[in-house]
Amino acid sequence: MVKPLSPGLTRFGGAMLICALAAGIGGEFSGRAGLSTLAGIFALASCFGFWPGISWTSRGFMAIGFALVLVSAAFQADWEPTVVTAVQKAGFIAAFFTAINAMRAAAQGSEPIIACGRFLAAQPPGRRYLALTVGGHLFGLILIYGGIALLGTLATEAANKEPDAEIRRHRIRRMLVAIQRGFVSTLPWSPLSFASAITLSVVPGAEWAQVLPYSLAGVLMLAGTGWALDTLFKPRLSAPPPPRVKAEGGWLTQMRPLLLLLALLGGATAAIHMATDVRIIGVVMALVPLIGLVWTAFQTPGGRPDLRHAARTARRFAFSDMPGLRNQTVLLVMAAFIGTVGGHLAAPVMAASGLDLTVIPAPLLLVLLFWFVPLTGQLGMNPILAVSLIGPVLPAPELLGVTPAAMVVAITAGWALSGATSPFTASTLLIADFGKVSARRVGLIWNGPYLLASGVLLSGWIVLLAVTGI
Image (tube, rainbow, N blue to C red; front, top):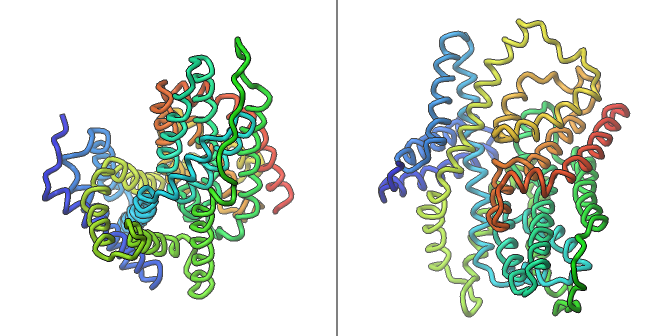
């Protein structure tokens, strides 16, 4: 049985994550590899600090990481730079995870943001699915998994007011899958998503701005397929439904706080990126905590800035909120570390076996790569681990005759479907908890047809990108 984490280790682990964030930002803006390595050292220190209070699964991941280092040191001459690279990627994951949770902590204390979610959940049946899909997407951009938690809470609260048990059951299912599918559709393109951040780091020559137009086309397929399936296969009720009630307020008025926040984040990120030439992911890592800190300063009864309130919120975030996410932190950090070292170990094994991936037609290889992520997700493999493992053994895009954008689209689209169907992902687990069903039921029964329909469309899109060389 895992013991509760002591106050001292709680504060130590939280402090190490803040240090990892600071060092990671410094590395992104200065280009100094030493700072990125330092971020990784802080990240691993936080994992060891959290050790007494994490699950045996998380501890197992740490043990596997240590074992892989020993194997690499015993059999590979270049094991040291490999471990340094793994440490740097672990630091990036820790810094990025800390940054995006800073925005979530700020947004969850904002009454206007909560009002946006309540407005979406109150939409009438004719447009509720589409509203919650859009809402799941927009909230997911800012709150990440917190968007599912917030909208899921508000949606189930609204649905539970329905006295008819049959209608209530169907409504909860349809509302929850709309939120989940809206969220996973952010993964292929959002600069705040791990799917985008990790994939861009493993595909040589990939740039977020170059990939964006093709990722957005995939996003429309993911969101549109869910809406089409919900429209075509509406549940048949045993009795006529009650009269619909229109939600109060207009769309622009109710959604203005969320849209303004997204505009601020997008505009500031673009401006800093163009001014400094720092990659988008690095700018986001620095900007999101700053916006979150300023935002919390204004979350006071009078609406006036209160620096002491912001400082208290920051301390609570560092020494309570982030340590509360210690299992997720350790799993994410170690998934990146294991994937990097494990992928480097697998590369010579594949070379010795004579397996040459370049002989596989590029369209087929990219489609197989696309399906690899959701299929391994059914086996319990985190997408970060899956992509980090396969990344080092993939041929460079130019060797396949495809663009980096096509390879990124294949991986991130598969990541999105894994987020909708794997019973081991946070998104599926959250939806299952709200729906009072098993995660496997959410992934394979609720989202099974969605997987097949979206998978066919996205496979066709990936083949088109590969064949045309876009």
